[in-house]
Amino acid sequence: MRLRLAWLAAAAALTFSAAAPAQIRTAKDPAVKKYLKDYGREEKEQKKEERKARREDPHRFLRPYFSLEEIYAAMDKAREDFPDLVRVIDYGQSVEGRPLRMIEISKGPGDKAKVLYSANIHGNEMAGNMICLALMDYFLEESQKDRDVEYLLQRLNVYIIPVLNPDGMARTVRQQSGVGTLYSITRKNANGVDLNRNYPYPAEALDRLRDSAGSSHKWSVNYRGPGPLSEPESRAIDALFAEHKFTLHCNWHTTGGLVMSPPATLPEPLPDDELHDALRKAYRDAMFDKYKQHTELQFYPTIGSLDDYLYHRYGALCITMEVGKKPVRRALLGCHNGTCSPLFWASNVYCLEREIANNLPGAIELAWRALAIHEDPAARKWTPPESVWVGEPN
Image 1 (cartoon, rainbow, N blue to C red):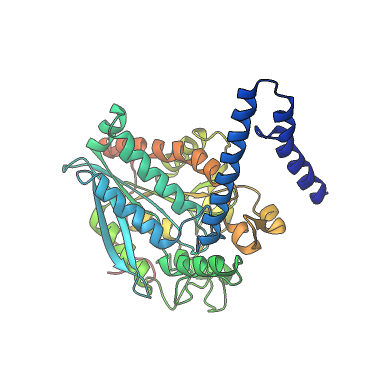
Image 2 (image 1 turned 90 degrees about the vertical axis):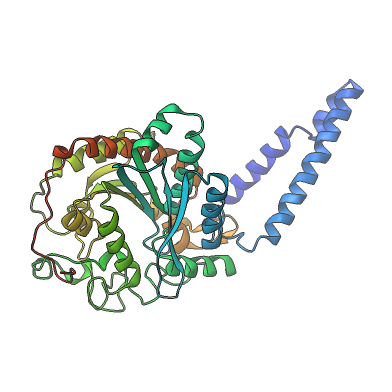
């Protein structure tokens, strides 16, 4: 069946090509024939150049995704192009010494709302970092021509961290770029810790949840580490939130087609459940291919969740997306862009541009919601408590 479809696609391309020989032969006017021949030659030359460029691209099996160096270069380029709007901030270092890098987009000082967009806390989940770059481009480019965006940036600071786990991402890129196959688990950081299980948690969580929700075993893909905040990447995020007091945090994972919010650990109601519900629905309603939406706990319970901790300690409202639908189908097919890499394509969507377009409106809507919440402090009900969770700094 697949061979037949491939043959049909090839036949269709031949039939409908602007410079197909049959079309040239049926043209009477010499000028039309010349036009079609010239176009045919240009088309062949273009395809030849594209094939050459692909062969010379060291990351050809990774495409349409970027390497870590390419992502950081895009952030540096944004600073060069928009020096009055952009700061690039290194807020820490990874286990292997890679910079933990954030971009700030701001139109000046003041008591402003702050929203943080982040992705790639799991090294193999790369769709979110590309959404982050697209969002960066949107805010910078539209700030020059859209009065609404200019108004927003005068009252709100946008922070973007495309890659929360640079060591895990670098291993993903190295494997996928090298042989076109992701052949080991690159989800965790260089110490083998799942960073989304490495945050403080309620004392009763270990008694109420099974180990797999944030495992104590090093071999587990969900290993939570020797203790909360044991990893430099986690400590750096904690320090960042302590400094900036972000109103809202939007984080992209893959995959499953979900919009989620706390609670992630235990089912007891939270003071801002209604507000989180409204934020999830606002994000979802802005999508043309709508995801399901519910709490993270309804997806699966998690010990050491980033979102639960940020809400508990800093009162940050947290919305998390699992980008892309049908991960099982992608895993079973496993082949795309000239590769056979089920692990990679199960965690990364085929139609990246479509998913960026699908997620961008919701992300922008969250910025407006963050501004409204900042201007109405009574909208948030939660006051961070005096008591601390397991592993939380005093």
